[in-house]
Image 1 (cartoon, helix red, strand yellow):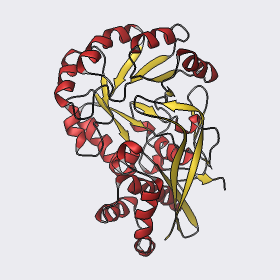
Image 2: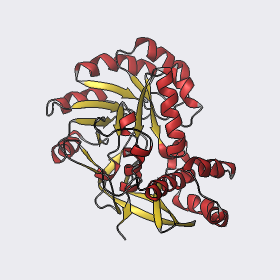
Image 3: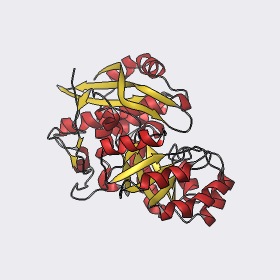
Length: 337
């Protein structure tokens, strides 16, 4: 099995800001795995919050490239276990695991959702993310991209007023992501005001390790609260079930589709809602997420929609949120260059 890694810098349509950072470009790493004339593609982006760079991931993979090439590939789950045994970061494992799943589907000639026994007749609509900016810029982004559901990034001193002004210009559903910027008291205070403004749920309002604060929020918030930064890996699901209404799984953080499938199953067993979210990434990563949507309650897979230009073809998303799946098997990905 041949392995290749390559760095890309993805240009964004607009400056993207959350409570802790802003950027105009996103570095990402694409992995390709080739076997029997078929090539699978996977992706993982750099992430300063987790001290991950494209170079660090590429170094990890290059260090074991000969072992990967000599690995007898059968199923993605077996390959994933091998990668974990090598001590790679979850981000690097994610890129390889996504490539392995895409390759596996292409070898079988079936899309992943079909291999997993799910149907794409019904699935949740992805939100479109509006980063922190001035009201005028946030409104301009909404007008540029009319969408049925918006995720609004907050974490300012005037968050409720921002949502109130945005509500004057759209009937779309709102989801709020404070990216750890609020306190428990702020969350409890803001929740009823935001509910009146058509907010569906709050995502990670408190710092990731503020479990006592989240317990207080769970007892008093009138809106559901979804874990993001508090839910990284499989072992976090059970703890989050005691402190959140649901979880947002990020493939890069948990290590790919293999653990994500187990996290979805565990969350459903525990009776909490399941969301899968994206990074600002290309169609390579988004197409992998799309394979999971029949199993989800919510999805945030707008990463490629935020780009000025893409590097791959695969799953497409219409302006009304409808997902168009490619005829190509696996995740349906093909690089443009």
